[in-house]
Image (tube, rainbow, N blue to C red; front, side):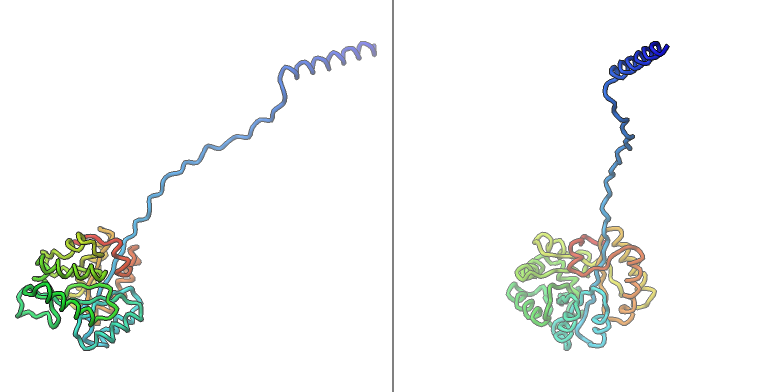
Length: 272
């Protein structure tokens, strides 16, 4: 009996070995693989910016310091031949402000409407324009560029603007077209000449009430949202200085960055 059981056990062992040999070597089942993640392109965040210039600086230290003391990246544009231009431009530069020359230019209605001393006039020849421009520039220390004061007549004149912009290019100056005339040729001509340039989008304070200025602030921000960039020009009024705090708050709310004029030139395009 024991012999029979031993034979049966041996037979069973042989049978198992034969079955395993037909299956090949044992391999563990691979772990399930998760599907590959899909990487979608993320569009870049489009930056929208504003810049602000305050014109007509140089008359009053108290009016100028309303803006010099603000911690916003303002550009301050100083009229040449004004009693406090030199000292205030130096002070503003030390406080981190961008300094511009506010170049007087001939308006429509001249001489009844007078842009003041140091003005570029259509009657001037090339030599006279160069002399006046150089004298005005020397009167505004630290200026990195200029924008026109008045100038509704002169900025429509291609000859005058080509002379002024030629001088700007020689001195590596920024040009900002204040757009005192819708027919100005200044900005387009500056672009064609390779001069770092911008043009005014909105005047902030033609009417000096809080309500009117706030409407212009909204227009400025609307322009920035539409075009990616907007440039506002104001004047040294106390109501304008107070309004800039509101502009800073509203721009943050709307995701619009207030930058220096130099930074804004990277985004500058035609305004509305």
